[in-house]
Amino acid sequence: GNSVTQMEGPVTLSEEAFLTINCTYTATGYPSLFWYVQYPGEGLQLLLKATKADDKGSNKGFEATYRKETTSFHLEKGSVQVSDSAVYFCALINTGTASKLTFGTGTRLQVTL
Amino acid sequence: DTAVSQTPKYLVTQMGNDKSIKCEQNLGHDTMYWYKQDSKKFLKIMFSYNNKELIINETVPNRFSPKSPDKAHLNLHINSLELGDSAVYFCASSPHRAGSYNEQFFGPGTRLTVL
Image 1 (cartoon, each protein chain N blue to C red):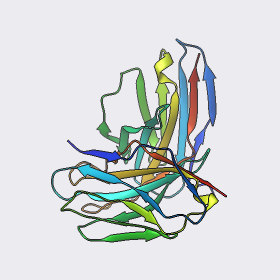
Image 2: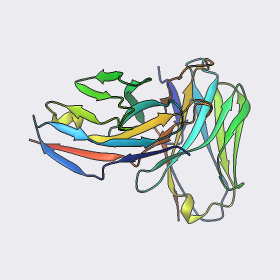
Image 3: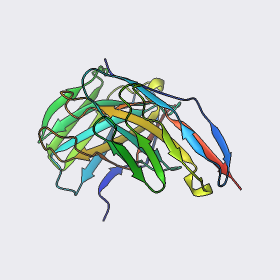
Image 4: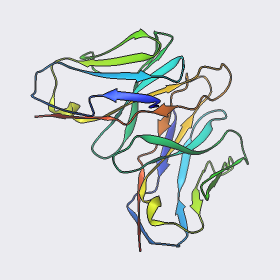
């Protein structure tokens, strides 16, 4: 079956630090990959996506590259801000699974001044 | 202006009670979903409806019954509530275009607490 593994949190960084949140997946075929963000007290928002190997998704300074050879989709940002503090979820949809999103366990990011 | 809305936002109830959570989307989407987020933030799909037809039904106790009166609404009814049902329940919707990924838009969540 499909599964997504994320690094355990919380991740605590100072403002302007470099961020990496690791994500690896297990799936047959060619899944589409996503990062969702959940700000405190809110629902999930799509942050970025990549639908095929070597695609790079990017949004709001965040980037992730779909690496089929390592089955990874690590999230990076060059300089985090306090406002980036949230829980980040890596997720995939596999073909033939009727749009069923499979999520990782989420990684809490806390950015301090 | 709210795209996907849920009511109530918070629900506190006693074990054994029956309760419902409502979801409405004004995006014109054909597909709607219910997800459960447990205390450790783990998110798992429960159900999905496409044009009022059930298309995803994960391993969920049959005390949970989704109902879709029209494609803009997907309600979740829970019978005989148990302590383990305490969680945040998220509704989502997406368009339905065959052969491609359809972005899912999430509601703000309903925090259910069973005492």
